[in-house]
Amino acid sequence: MRAAERLYATRGLAGVSIRQIGEAAGQRNNSAVQYHFAGRDALIQAVLAEHAAAIERHRLAMMTALGDPARMSPLDRLRCAVLPRVEHQIELGTPSWYARFLAQIAVEPALREHAVRVHLETPSLRRLYDAMHAERSAAHAERSAAHAERLAMHGEGPAVHAERHTTHGERLATHGERPAVHAERLGAHVERASADAERAAAHAGPGCGGREPGDDTGATARREAMTRQLVVHMCAELETDLAAGRAAGRVGPGDAAAAWRRLGDDLVTGLLGLVAALDADDPARGPA
Image 1 (tube, one colour):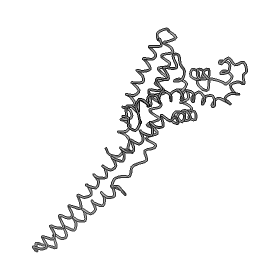
Image 2 (cartoon, helix red, strand yellow):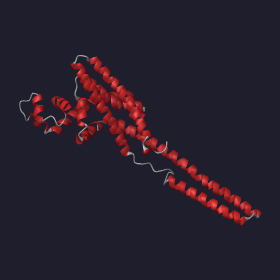
Image 3 (cartoon, rainbow, N blue to C red):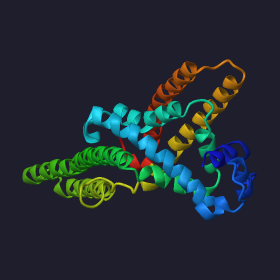
Image 4 (cartoon, rainbow, N blue to C red):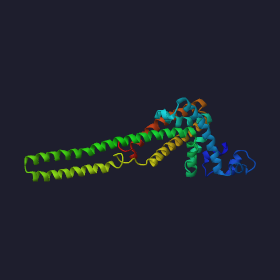
């Protein structure tokens, strides 16, 4: 599998045959890879599963130290999502091929989706994502309730206005001051006030008095895909640079570990800002 990972990472998926993988692995039998993995996709899936299991071990250790994801801060949850991948890269040593292998996988939709599923189905990452989504849903419900309350208050305004005019009309009628003229004016005011109230109620929508929360599944999926791609490509870029530096004698094991940890910190900081910006621009969130 290491031979396949290295060749796919450096030559791309289309540039490598099963036969070449067998030769790179030192297999004399050209059918050995086909026999063990039944084809390219099964081989790639086996490589992905092996790395996912290693990353899972790092993440479980980190989550054990930090506790229940539902009680973690957003920063700690993001660190748990990103940094175990960084620790795995350090564990692989330099040169490594996994980050560039993933970048190649990312350009082929079926394999990319499989890679996403392999990682999302790990228990630790599933718990993290469930906690993130629950927090977002609770925040969305809170914003919707606040919006409904504002709309309800807005809807009360025309009704109060109409009530004042009705009371004024009654007083005028009692005192006999041109009741017909005033009644006509008051009728127009009441009609306008009722129309305002009706528009406010329509805008408030059914049930809670605010617009119904939109289905933000698509927005969430786009957000998560964007963050995944950012991590994949930045890791691949660093892995390439470290491999070149190691070949030239400029990068030692300690240098590589420090570089990966700097990237991990940069990714966490950058992703926090990216998620905040995407949230602010997400129409499904409703008014703040």
